[in-house]
Image (tube, rainbow, N blue to C red):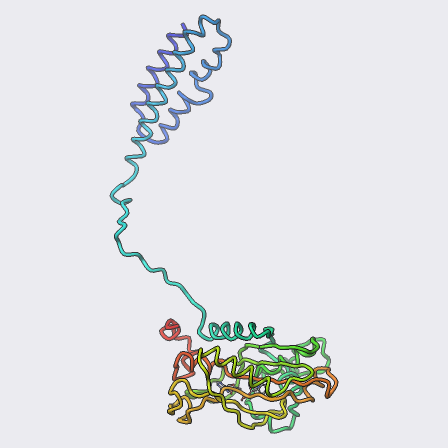
Length: 354
Ligand code: FA5
């Protein structure tokens, strides 16, 4: 009786498999003839209840049937897979040229800033940061630029409009209403940093600054500067000169000529301007260096004791040098860019070259 039933399952299963046309039908067939609740499986589970003699006959027969149906199922499944793939489409031509992936990259100014930060970090400087929207106090007052002093006009300023006829304030807790501006230099970060730290200190401050001035090949209204400040008990101009020469020589990978000229900044005393030989024309004269062979890179000097005082240090206790230079101008020299206005133009044809 059982033997006949098994033969019947086998015949029925094989017949049903021949009519299967879709993957769904094949899955249903598998459940019906090979699944956990299939008749054949129940039969196999019931073998334990048979007599030893019956087991000897029924056992092998049921197992053979299961294996046979499984083989038949696998063969049909394989055929299904084979037919469902369009091998012509799937063919991979390993000799075909690759498709290049468009990759973005950092803006040249950011690249230069990273390079500068690396060089200064190696010399033991810390990287500091400050706000682009600054108070009049930090941008001018604390840097020893009195309200009516003509030095305040040295850097034309973008003042921020007042809100609701009130002067806007950057610090709402501050009851003194302060005028806000777009910082004209990175120097305000000197005071902000010194207020929170005690010498000895060495910092560099990369950042964007703004000036309300007309543009030409070497002047922009929005550009980048890099401030450098070193304060201690006995920091001198000699330290400045060594740091400047070491930095520029490492940056350009060769010995660079530096020229110091006496100058005036309210926040340094004595003050000087420093130029480096124009790497674009090698000192021959070109539109960028205004035919002089030199490029004005920055201002520097020994920190005015009044600035130390504004930061909360006792007058005469420390001495140090400060230095601010145009990162954008440095980028122009490095990449031989003849017009500064290209740098922040957003023109991708220009940016993609770096
Ligand atoms: C300053 O901004 C001072 N804060 C620098 C300083 C810092 C002096 C610490 C002393 C101590 P100055 O206005 O000269 O100085 O600007 C510094 C540099 O910024 C210039 O030498 C130049 O390289 C760059 N720069 C100035 N104006 C522009 C501009 N419109 N476009 C591009 N770069 C500019």
